[in-house]
Every structure is written in C-alpha cells, then in structure tokens.
Length: 164
Image (cartoon, rainbow, N blue to C red; front, side):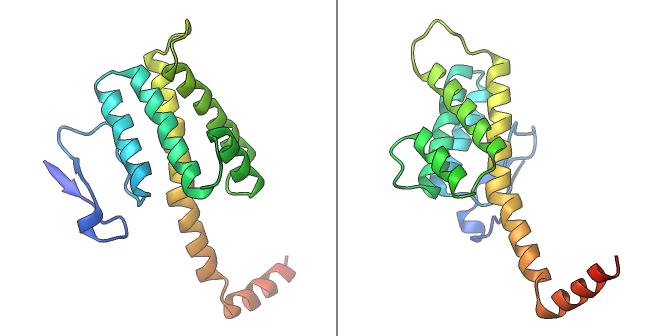
C-alpha cells in the first residue's frame, strides 16, 4: 500500500512512500529536489544494509543542504561555517554537521577505520533531525511568529507582559 503527500507544491511534485510494509524512513515536508533525492538514497542504502554507502549519502545530502543555503561555498566545511556565521544553524547543529561530514569522509575513502550499522543509523538520525529543523520546524515557527506578530497581538502581549 502506498501514499502520496502534498508537501506544499501540490501532489504532482510529491513522491510516493510505502505504508505497508512500513518504509524505514520518510519525511513529510518539502525539500529541495537534490536534498530529497539524496535523503531517499540514504534510506535505500539503510534498507539494503549498505552502511558505508549510507554514510556517504548522508554526507551528500548534507552537502546538498549547504549548497542550497550557501551556493558560493567551495567545500562542505566552508558551507557549514557560513551557515553558522549567518545564524542559519546553531552551534550544536553545526557540530552535528561537521561530525556527519567526517563520518561521510570515512565512508568515502579507503581507510582502516570501519563504518558499522550503528554509525550509519546515528548519522541518518542526525541528518533527519537537521532536515526537520531547517525544512519543517523553522518554517512552521516563522509562520507562527508572523501570525502572532500582528499589531493587535503585540499590543495585548505588551499589556500582559507588564502584568507580570
């Protein structure tokens, strides 16, 4: 059984996902196409138990995020730093991004250090959290803040602030 979600651009732009048997990972909000493609590949790698490939694709998805927000950044590291300096991500999210960059590099290059299932699952979990913050929660908060920042609201909010 499959479903299709309207992620803001209409159903024709949404992709199908499996309801039964359950798909391992799914995001129900709009993403830039290259970010969505990379994330879907991450989920396919995890399902196939291709954990080295999964962390490489996590890195690719992270790079797609930074390219969208910092198109002039020449490297993933520079993109993450620029996003932090512009306030697009917190220090904590920047730290997560750098850790994902490192683990993705380990997966992409032949080294003695190995990547295991837990490494991949954790990397995907943190990527998913970054995506949720940037593409779902932040836009929701901005909409809520804009809605609640009407002049009538501000006047009544000031009155209630002075009552405290």
